[in-house]
Image 1 (spheres, rainbow, N blue to C red):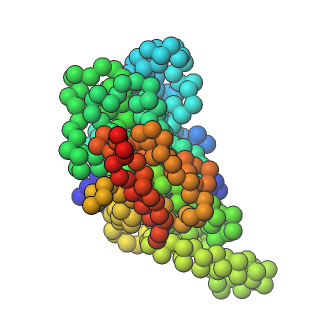
Image 2 (image 1 turned 60 degrees about the vertical axis):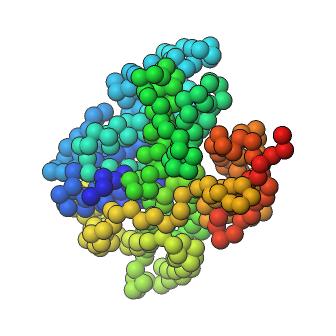
Image 3 (image 1 turned 90 degrees about the vertical axis):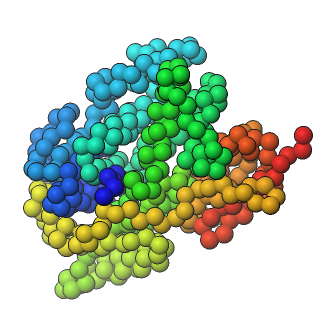
Length: 390
């Protein structure tokens, strides 16, 4: 069995912590060594399991550990080498002192992810279940390694180590090999650390993103955008959970209109996300607090013993050689063609949709190519390249 990382996200208040906790309980009951992690600064795992948690991993029963990450503590105690790399990186440009690294925007997110990656590579856990912050913060968290790598490459001569942002694709298609780490300086080591982290997050056999929603207008609209953006950044979303569904036989006229509204949005969700496995979680009459109450979700909804398997819904972004040059295909399901802005900036392709922008550096073999056309069809953006005039 592949060891897995499953990341739960969704709009604030939809109950993703309870859904993540239910998965952790089921995983542990299957005899799999499981870690439930919270990266949300407003941690509530301790409240859900009625346990007092500190800054370290806490075992609450066989096969189940809880961990509320304190990024500052992690920075200071688990990653002295990374702090050294960042210090080298920043001091060379006289940007900031090493003691201020933790104050840089995004550093807390980076160290939370590095800690999860470290725990995964320790081989201690079969499954790591991650309860993330609300949608926007989750996307900022997940895209940060790629963003920081992009800036590092622009500021420093990283290209000489032969590592590209699309390393998994580039190595397969263009036969690029990772460099010998012993030959690298601190900045190059930091760059490769980020590359390894990004590859782990985008490894479809290891990492899944699962979205929790509720049948309400504002939440459904944010869920659609969330799904689109996650695909824009090439993450594998392989599950959707509709939470707090009222029972149809509630027998109270006061709830009739609510039932009709919920049914309308449940239909919209199922029609929009036809490619995804969809799980329906009922509204419970009592607060989901304590292991016994959370276990109700396990008994009522998480009945499939294969629920932890990765389901690869969309192909990852990829370059394909053509008779004229190359095509790059990027999955952006649910996007509005009119809202997609695309341009080539030096050695990058820049894709903008909604409030998000992604820079995709081109592999070396395409550095002398230019965009010859683009089209969006069936949720896939295809960008064509031909050799430019010298």
